[in-house]
Image (cartoon, rainbow, N blue to C red; front, side, top):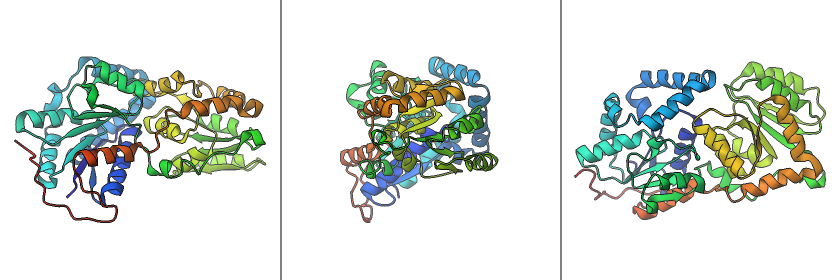
Length: 387
């Protein structure tokens, strides 16, 4: 039995990334099996979940204005909890999970689950502590705070203030950072990009997303900068990977073309800058790695806040064309990287690479979950799950 249920859903990269990193942190702190990842939407209605995820991706990539309007409607019209009738399968599944797993606490990285928990509390007397791990910055939808919970963990102070301004109890609002992979904390002091002032070549990482417009043009312009070391991560687009590999073969300075990779923490910590869209996980991982970000795409809604956080702190830039990507990077690396160093210094107070472990340890201490980094058996629980 797992003592912590981590609820998430596959709509956007940030939710699942945060949830899986939290599971790892809880397991490292409390022993293997302490936490369990659960996608209620996928498990309760796999076909409907697949269709709606496809619709979500289509909307943000092909019709961003439509998604922006829907995002604002969700924020202002507040259809939940009235629309919970459509999630009766998810509610029943969570009820069954709680009775079977007997968790000590529940965390969620997806806002809709707060309404299900609230319903179980009101109608069934659920007593298990529930926490929201907010994955967005600044442009935070009201879905995150309408249902009350035992605590909110926010990625930064600006986002925490949004929750406080919504009249949520101040003592329940915690600035923790975004739960990134443990590799960021383990290698934080060991991995750094080469010293530009000593004459080393700038290293640029380009993460290409499925909906990125003019991605190949941007990659080719970056590869044309033969005094820079370029890494392009193209995901699962094998055709693009082969074309860029052929193009990069003409360079003298090293260039690496990657397909799908799980080495993003290493790449971010060893490159001077990353070019990518302002996705939740990518932006927060870049912050954790202190890798300045050049944002070349912003999905209206939640991603607007991700870039706004960078803008407020004077980090990186938002560009609208491939030529602008190169122009901004040239300025950053000029004069031995003076502007780049300003960006990196501005990242220092935002970077919280230990966020996942910090959240896990705080909740383990507060709720008396046994800690044993090797192995342990669960003691019979005396917790009252339902009144």
